[in-house]
Length: 130
Image (cartoon, rainbow, N blue to C red; front, side, top):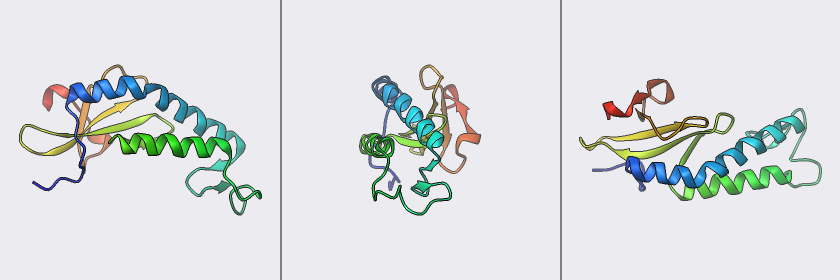
């Protein structure tokens, strides 16, 4: 089968990875809040109403750190879907061969939800329906 992702997680592997990356997710959320407070738009990579990173030709240090965290998570196969909410997905292959996402949001315990790729967060279902 051709899958969209090269790295897939079992539920157990995703929960184990989650235990390891929760501090990074917390830091990611904190960095985003600090950047928001400074008026820095992480998506356009500039200060709101400004032109360019910050007049110094460089990103704020919080942005540099945020980029490092996102690259690390992505390299490990974790998909960051919401920086503000600490929303992450873990690619998974169901027993029927369908590629889906195990879904976790900051503040939840272990991974308890999954959704199909097209459905996204709004289509979250309990793991017992996996």
